[in-house]
Amino acid sequence: MACPICKKPTNTELRPFCSKRCADVDLGKWLKGDYAIPAPDLEATDEPESGMRDARAAKPH
Figure 1 (cartoon, rainbow, N blue to C red):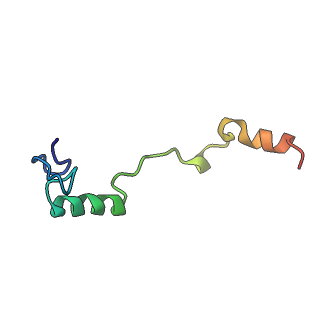
Figure 2 (figure 1 turned 45 degrees about the vertical axis):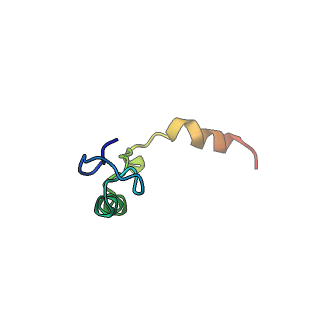
């Protein structure tokens, strides 16, 4: 298995990374949001998402 940061062979103690430095680089990417999954802007659309608003309005409390 190769280190996801530098592609060197991994260290069994730091797996999947090869060094503490690469593990820290990866942590920094998570903290900065580099691994964020893009999502559609819900405010830009006027349609309710998959009918959830309609279901809530029709359901008695």
